[in-house]
Structure formats: structure tokens, C-alpha cells
Length: 441
Image: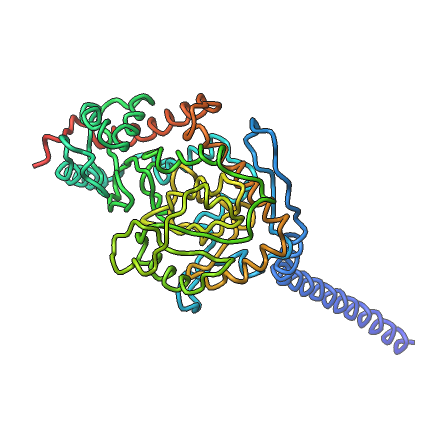
């Protein structure tokens, strides 16, 4: 009897132990499965995202000029996959790459023209979220201000290019008839500027790091200056010619054209034109115009083309000069479609908000994929027309800088006042404790 009881007891104990082991094993299995699923989530996302992007549709043109929008568009179906994320920045086609745009976060709403608050943040750059100078930063800023004061030409400010100057309203009044930079800078005082303005004239960034200053352009990766519309007629004025000289998409030739001067970042234009000049055909016409800095480039020059002549073609090439190409605004505004490497710079025209296959057709910096992109464009004519339409709608928001029409005058005026207030909030800290430029010696 005792033996039977003992066996029964051992049997129950064994069952309990086995049950605990089974539950422990099951718990371990659940933990393993959970960890495995977590590890696979990034892989699944990578697989799913291209599919979701591929099914995004391209929207048609918004015809209501009063609507400040260009509609939404994701990746264009059928476009070369390699174009979506990276554009080569090397001429030999090696592994060096760079993002299509320097600020990916700005593209979250790329299908809609950004609201005033987003534009304010963009134009202010690094100074939008700046609170106050800390420790030795004020001393560094004042030292830099003294350097700026030393390179300022108050009698002839329009003769100092590519350097920041410290100017007052009277200095600018004296040269407003001599250069558009002076005339356009005076608008700062209409927007509420009280006294001294740190202003940068020219196309090449200055090395000022510790002070806010106004500028026509800036390096898109550094965002040092506060952007302001300067030399407006040169960069926006030609948009008015588009209204009278352009033609419908269907009336244009399937040809890509470019004319420009031999200026440019690191000799880039020279290398491109030398390469492409020999490939002139009924489909490609890329050459320097008659205005040249280097006489040796004359052999790569052809007769100039007016905007009206260029707009006879569906495809317009834009290449950075010393900064953003001066013709980019009117090209985007036209009924043609722009081919370009994404610009390294940004201006009042908000080039960093432009998105490939939404507002333009992207190219490698050495144009080695130009033939491929031309083939794609011809095979996707309606999509290219839609890309052109969206670029046109984007640029219509700047049309008042080219014409007498001021549909958005109140919005622009309020925006400019906010930029001036940001500048004065920061610069006032530098002039605190009765500091003046007379102390620079």
C-alpha cells in the first residue's frame, strides 16, 4: 500500500514539474517570437515603403491662381529608382553621394506651398530658434562685428561684394540709384528695422558665424544668414516674360537647352559644357552664351538664347552658377519642365522645398544620366507636363516680385516684419551694455 501511495505521490510531483517546465518553455518561446518580430520590423518597413511610394499618384495642375498650393505628389511611377534618394556629387561616378535635398524634414509637406510659419522658420535659418548668447559667445560676436565694421564701405556700399557690411539707412539711400542691392535692402526699414543692418551683397557666402545678417543666398547646408529678396529684378523679373512669351506644352519641341556664363561652383559649369558641347544634336543644345569670363571658353560658346527662344522647348537645363542659377525661377514658372542637379544653395525662392519628380527632373552633378532621363521624359510626356504644372504653381507664389500685382502683399509684409524682429532680438544682445561700434579699434 505504501509503495502505491509513494508511486502516486511521485507521479503527481513529476506531473507538476513537467507542467512547470512546459510553461517555462512556452514562455521562452513567446519571448523568442516577440524579439524576432521586433527585429524583422525594420526589414518589413524597407520592403513596404517602396511599394507605398510607387502607388502614390501624381496630381494634376490646380487652376485656381488664388489657391496657394501645388497639390500632393509622391514618387512618380516608372521613374528610375536610383533618382529618388541620392544624386552623385562626383564627376567620376564613384561612390560619393549626397542627399537630393539638404533638409529632408522640409519635404514632409512638399506637395503644399508652405504656410507663413514654416516660411519664417526657413528664411531665418539657424537664428529662428536662437535664444541668447552664452558665456564668451557675446565677445566672439562683438569681435566679428568689429571685423565687419572694418570691411564696410559706408560711402560706396555697393562696391563691396561677398562680404557682410554694417550699414545704416542713410548709407543705402546714397546708393539706391546705383545698384539694386541698395534699393532692395531699404525694404528692411519698411519692415521695421530700427538702426544698423548687417547685410551681405553678392553670390558667394561670407564666413560670418556668430552674428545674424541678411543675404540674398546662403549655403543650403549651413543656414547662416537670414534670407531676404535682393537683386529682385534679376532673379524674379523674367517671370513676367513667361506670361507673354510662353506657349502650351504640346507646342514645344522635345529638346533640352542651356545657355549661361562660365561662372560657377568649382569650375563645374566648364566641365559640364566641355563634355556636352560635342554631343549637340536635334535633342540636346548645351553651350555657353556670348558673355564669358574665360576667353578660352569661346570655343564652347554659341549664340545666346532669349527666354522666349528657350521656352520653345519642353526641357530646360538649370546649372548652379556662383549660387542658384539666376534663370531658375522663370524656368520653373514656365510651361517647360526643368532638368537639374539639386542646387547647393537657397534663396527667397525656397529652392530647398523643391522635390525631384514633383517640381523638376533630377540629374547627376556630372549629367552622366542625362540621356537616361531624356528617354524617361519622352516616354512619360504627361507626367512631365504635370511636373511642369506643379513647378509653375509653386512659383506663382512669388509672381508679385516680377509684376505690379500684389495679391499676397499683406502676407509678405507680415512675414518680413517677423524676420526683422528675429534679427533685432538677436543683434540687440550684441549691442547690450551700451556697446557701440566706436569701441572697435
